Image 1 (cartoon, helix red, strand yellow):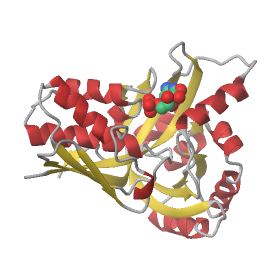
Image 2 (cartoon, rainbow, N blue to C red; image 1 turned 90 degrees about the horizontal axis):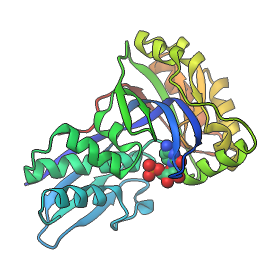
Image 3 (cartoon, rainbow, N blue to C red; image 1 turned 90 degrees about the vertical axis):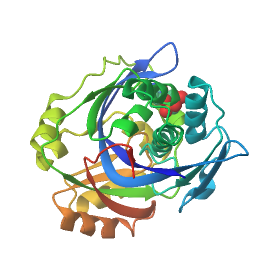
Amino acid sequence: MSVTVRVPAKVNVQLAVGAARPDGFHELANVFLAVGLYDEVTATPSPDGLRITCDGPDAAQVPLDRTNLAARAALALAERYGRAPDVHLHIAKDIPVAGGMAGGSADGAGALLACDALWGTGASREELLDICADLGSDVPFSLVGGAALGTGRGERLTELEVGGAFHWVFATATRGLSTPAVFREFDRLAEGRDISEPTASRPVLDALAKGDPDALAAAVTNDLQPAALSLFPDLSATLAAGREAGALAALVSGSGPTTAFLARDEETAEKIAEALRSTPACRTARTATGPVPGATVL
Ligand code: C5P
């Protein structure tokens, strides 16, 4: 017997970053959109205890020990329900690793839902969301999907209405960026400046509600983008190439280095992806639409 859960990637259509808090995290106003690039996590009983395997183009970069968010999710659920974490978790990885698209968070949320179903724990949605928030700031959104405003360190979610599908292109980069390093660079660049409290952008929320790509393109913002570009300057050329190929908006996805391009329709998205593939810092370019549902048992 086994359970497979499919979990989407995310892009931030707004990422407003406040000052560093005493616990080291930053206060955020973060608008997430789940997009149709997926990891799948399969949970199977394992008499020898917890085991993680992974396949996919980036599998070599995925840790298979207890630092993997999928392993941490299984351990947290097992501990809460007083059972042994005897599970083999296989991750079929399609979301870029260290890419700013919540790939690791997706595996955490996927493993949690898969173990809950496999073990018949029957945890409530609130309990699952609590465990997700302990695992990482983006993990609750991977469970919920759709579109949501994240506040606090990004883990407190308010679901958002979206009036239509948005077409995206995602360019993965030739190397990864560490999220803590990008936040540290944000702090360095912000030194000596007043940082205002992050708040949700009304134009972003309205554009999502209307399903209007032109309005969303005019409204998207990412406060981490200058930090990501400072650590990975070649991304500027990727952003410019996407704009030149017809993207309505071009931005760094989350902490990067994946870059995200909003397109008017599927056909333009394919054209932009083709143009991006020949830029130097781009490894692959993929199209995807959003919003899509969060973690789902298949
Ligand atoms: O929550 P998560 O483990 O995904 O965060 C990874 C790192 O990103 C944190 O250790 C921290 O350095 C940074 N971070 C932050 N403020 C947030 C979210 C993440 O500084 N709101």
